[in-house]
Length: 210
Ligand code: GRF
Image (cartoon, protein in one colour):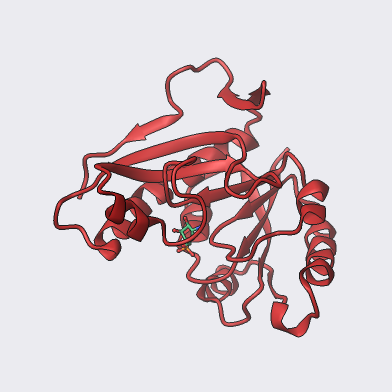
């Protein structure tokens, strides 16, 4: 059975694009954005996918908006909900409703640098290895069980933009991989950790690339 995926995004949508273009055993049944102008929605329409804009600025508070959003997501009967640059904190009611089938990508090696401006903060700390993480979403912001991480070198002449670009290349590699594992039913949770069935080696990617 094909895994039905709903994508939530707010902007550019390059991670969504990487997932849509990878050949995965999934069907993207809807792409939903809280920002009507998101480039990711344009791309979804161009691919003939169902693209939905739900403008959060038209709703009084987070709870009201998230309850509407959850209803819209549920309408598409997803097996998996993929956050791909969805730039709003989700209410705990939303997260509870999709518990265990909600994935996110974060541009740091969690638990380092949860929250925003991860590349700026990494450079400010002078760390030498940075990266990205795909994790299950829990009510604890950017702290859910980790599925896969990719590490990249930090260079002395990096700016937030050059570092972000290096990390993004790896995001485009690990997010489709995580979605594939989920769709294939290969992700096992044990003691709050995510392991890959029958494989103890491949939940980490090391890049030396530019
Ligand atoms: C990515 O860096 C992702 O890690 C973060 O937001 C950014 C979204 O980029 N959560 P895109 O919209 O997928 O291009």
